[in-house]
Length: 522
Image 1 (cartoon, rainbow, N blue to C red):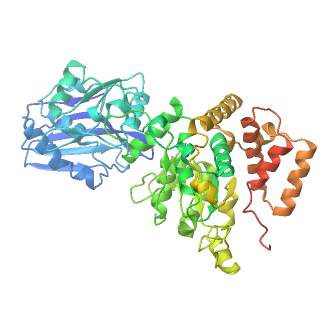
Image 2: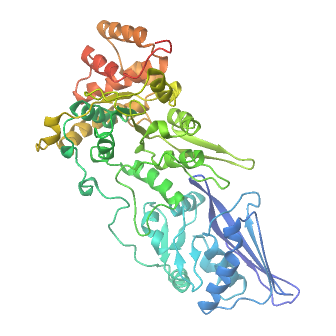
Image 3: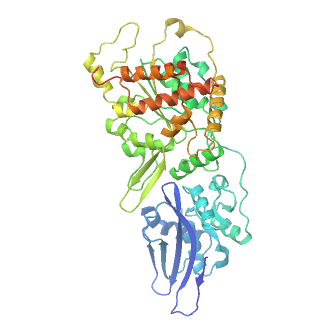
């Protein structure tokens, strides 16, 4: 509990202790802020493995205190951030350090800080700026048994997602102290989401001309959470169709939304004043992206694009243009659903269970599938181009789609195609069946998440289905992983048809979606 050792004897010091937090991955670790004010030559020492942003807090804290009308003691101030072996980074420790100085110098009462976690960045005029990872901080405070959290008002809506703990939002240092005295902070605004709802996206599959087979495959991908790769000539609609995928995906559940919101909060991408994410993330990084930006990492680890796409879609356009080493870093996150970043002092883990979507040209010139025969690429050039995508990565993609060029009649047609809303209703029915199937299986939300024993349990096959699969394995040289992924797709196809038994037509369609699988010697 916050406490202080006070004395007016000049030989003794004044000490205050209060609580805050530090991020480690998407989790928050409790941090004890100890402020000691000693009589003697004025000075300031900050210990406990602070990073540069934390070390610079001295200027922000001192200026904020002066401009808010409080005194900065002309004595030796020592602040310890415990535990001492945990690296602290960011600016969320500004406010607890300022309140610790006020408590230790008897400008505020120590009892005000009792049972309260304090989080927030200070501006020079005493204002409070939003802090990254506030949602994780509040969860850590509740787990620690604290009853209140004092935080910037801009973070209040995300913090309000955690029940069972009192929030004290404030916009300034003065308001923060008033909230501590009264036990009531600023009112938390209602409404406002962190992402637009699907109805406001203004992107609809009805605008896409033709490409019925590709749309069907993307419907299957959305219904089961499957990875997909589209190969087709320039201008055939690959990117347009991929960017409309959020319009047919189901919204995030409360549990999923909280998990995705934590990642965006830790990454600093949650806009101030907004709450839980409802729309599934869609991330589309440029092919020049670095390994660390894609999967996470850095000197101070941050979540990468594959984690920001957690429970949503990571779309890689022009897939062969990505560095091969960068693409290979995706293999483990796609398989395990998480990224583990190891450092000398600690290890952090970020979730990464997303749909991988990709698009590519079938050859360097892009016209291999062109009906006019405009391709000028030699076979060895095409093989070298496709070789930029390794077999192990291709093996982890469930649906391989060959997207043809549009014919003249399709290009000039003005007909409105099937809308996203109609497709979305079928996807929602299939996802509802999967939620019921996996309701007692935590961690499995859709067919793509099934592991081996789930596949054996829910993907029973008739003799005819087994015969079809045997022929596919022999002719295409499928791996055991590809075999399991075909079974997952067949389960999704059956769910879209609202039937419990997998039939031969489901097997045939799932095999059709493995068009890029070939034996190495063919």
